[in-house]
Image (tube, rainbow, N blue to C red; front, side):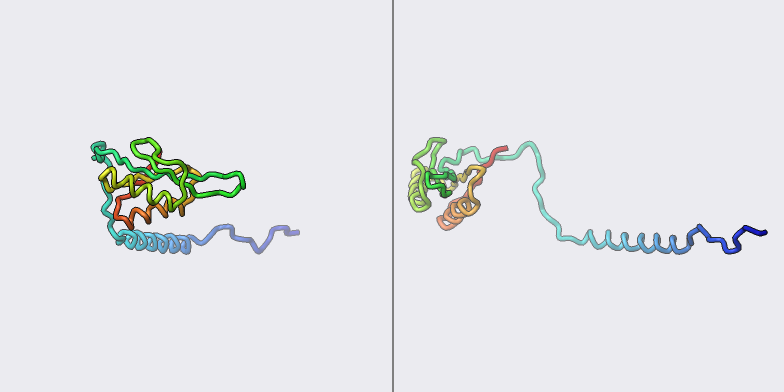
Length: 145
């Protein structure tokens, strides 16, 4: 009685097809890497320790705040400061416009520092940026490291 199988299954894979696949992938990645180098060049500033900063302090400052009044609704409030000292209490947008215009005129500078709380609304900050652009001021966004 012969118990050996006549039809044996080959476990070996065809290496010819594997080498063709590797060769095609190699060509694909070479062509892809050559195409990736044709991007638009960017002229970025180089980082160095001798970064020049404006020696004059930007005195007029708009601070964007969010306060929750007793009714529970969020309000976009502003505060105008000069040389670190608040010139006003909490103001709405229209009142802030006149206060910051007075502060810029008094300082004689065209730069306006814009600072804000972490919870400040983006649109409140953008409103101040738009105001600075319409008045031809140079806005500087303040941030903490």
